Image (cartoon, rainbow, N blue to C red; front, side):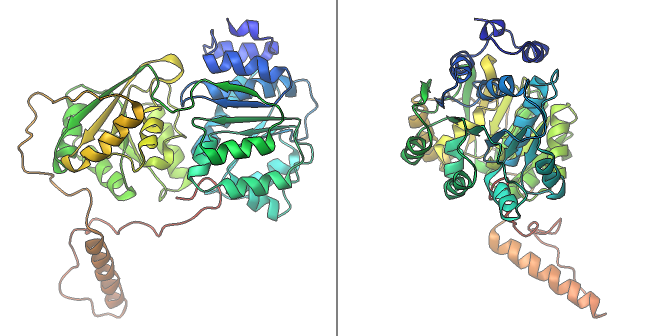
Length: 435
């Protein structure tokens, strides 16, 4: 089957052709005809399977001939990165139409979002918390809503958004069609589908999340103190041209980025303590090739979509085995190929065993020839103990108070955190995810 056989609006077929879409993926070939038939849809498909186009194209097909000025479609997404990516995909597919879309998420001012609601932008892609903020302010009536999409529903459950989704469903009118997409189908999600879907067409390509077939997986056993040096070697000796690297914490992401840059490897980071503008610039720079490496925490695991991304590196193992699936799903998307590399310290072997049980496979172990596995550790620790960080912050504050009083202490408060504080105070944005 080709895209031209899907009976989509000619302007959308032109947009798909511009993007190089010739043959639909499995989820697209099954979901698009079912959605065009007019019923609800329940689809369980892996990350990277092409499901965004699977729900956007039927909606756009219905919206192209309709008059502008009314918001007719709402897409709910768990993170701001994913919301922005969906809007970018929509604009690319609809480039030959007048359909407009807006992203509604936290971390930015509400003014432009309020204006989008007032103007009745055709499609709103929103994170649950920020959308509820607009509801409370009376800025988002959505009285003309006809299409509702819940994307990455299992991730919204993981992030605690299920009560917010219930409140949103109680606020908006009953849509003409509801599309429900999830990589897995845990019992609370199944219960939600039974309440909101009406005789849906069911597409169960994968009830158990698994890495895409095109992902080549490997594990490099290495002491935790040598992980940074091994990553530098893998990047420096041409084993990887570019990489999306996942760390356990924001502090480790910051320090790993500095380590890579010190070794001449251009890198930037993206995590919850970065402003939306900083995160947008980092992702755009990575996509444009300005940075070889983007270091991220799991907040971005489902929101980063980089064309032809060759490598994903698990610098630290994720807290949940399922997050491994979502991380490595950033490569080998829509039928392409890629490599997932995991650096595993001895103390992480039990976590790796859990991941291997989830993926139902033993991941091959590798060693980098010529690497000094018996070396003496990092040039600087990536993770400073919490007590040391707190002590350094208190010392800095004491020094600031002393300087303000005109009696600075004779000795500095340099220490394990001398190059910076432990990080900005943690914030909870109502929209775009709760970091």
